[in-house]
Amino acid sequence: MLNNKIHVVLAVCDPRGAYSRHAGVVMVSMFSNTKSSICVHILHDETLNEDNRAKFIELTEKFGQEVNFIDVSEHIVKLGADVDKLAGGFSRGCLFRLFIQDLLPVDKVIYLDCDVVVELDIKELWDIDLSDCKIGAVLEDENCSKRKRFFCRYTGIDIKKYFNSGVIIFDLKKIRNDENIFALASKFFMRYPNTSAPDQDFLNIIFQKSVRVIDRKFNYWGKGLNYSSTKGKLWHLLGKPWELPRLPGVLYWQYFAMTPWCRDLMTDMAKAWANSRLTHVHSSDCIKTLWRQLKDNLSPKGATPLYVIAVIWHDMIYRIRKRFKI
View 1 (cartoon, rainbow, N blue to C red):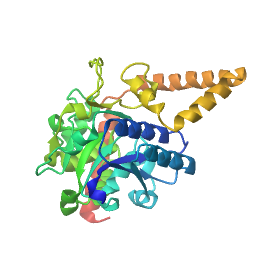
View 2: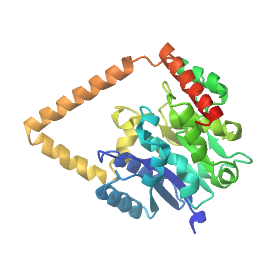
View 3: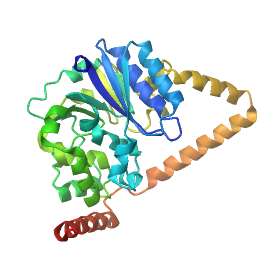
View 4: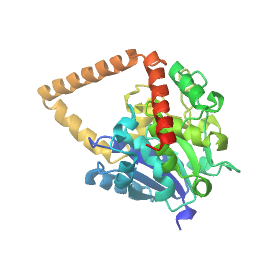
């Protein structure tokens, strides 16, 4: 029965209880544009609360679809005590997909980041023939940072074939026959703890020679794009689409209005406007958020000497430990 559906994987790490609604937007946008039956597998840890779980169930029942909750808490700790450090500046949720070959009893899945909006029939993506390849993905722009270029040269990744991991088709049957993603990931993070995009760099290292490059419309992002027509694309809004004031960011809010989380937002807004002191507090929080974003934007992101030294140092330590079995 499971193999008669389109299987989509989302990763939810939600310590504050506010992230689940973004996964809800992905689901609503996908359900609204797809006629086929879909089973959404939500990979989560102990941070998924009962209220958000209930909203996911309510949402899928509304559209006549299916949701499957998979707790990865016991698996994620196997990566070591410093899981959050391994994830770098990202949520540990980016590492959840490393366990899909063991946790999902299906042969094929589509993985989606939670900052995407689906403006096409997801069956188009599902029906792509991967041929002999293990995954399908869209290539990144070659105009990447110096830091990324250095890391690719050092590890042997072909920058011209570097793909984005926000939207991936996984042929789990082929992967199970040839790869143990978790075992390879453990070695990778021990060797390269300073990678700037941990999950994406790792997936490029193990799958770059077995990736079917797919049309960019299935993972559409970037500046200066033509936003006149949003239909027919899977929009990857890179980071925080809920903070974008114009198209395609407005798509997020259009679909958010169709989710159970919209009720909570309306209630919170009404309470805030009813009390001037609370309104002031919210305004203060917005200023603090903008200040943090400004500092992040001004921080150096190039391949600094310290970064280069760190990558080489950790790689040398890994080689020494492996050689002398320590």
